[in-house]
Length: 113
Image 1: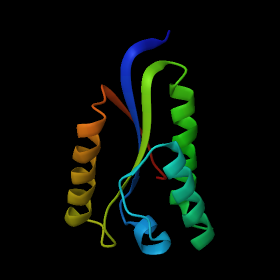
Image 2: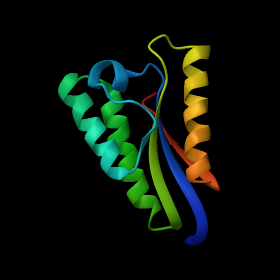
Image 3: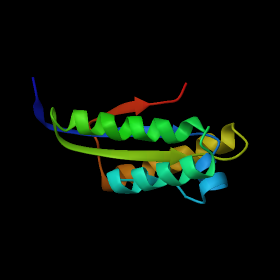
């Protein structure tokens, strides 16, 4: 059953910042069009990088969620080349920034792992 009162955020996470390092795209990447463009840039820069497919999957999940929820957005959060605390801090800061503009009731996490 659809819950048209909920706002849902579909989140893809690139902890090692392949988008920044390989495709020169900074996070957070917000919205369907921006995510599709970023995924295409990364796929062209490195066709074997799984992060581009993760973003395509997140966009697909967003489209599916729109059938059930009133307000759905997709975002890709990016970390740092050296995965660890610094990477996680960057991801957290980006999530805080996104949540200021899109206060979601729930999340759908899409990963490549």
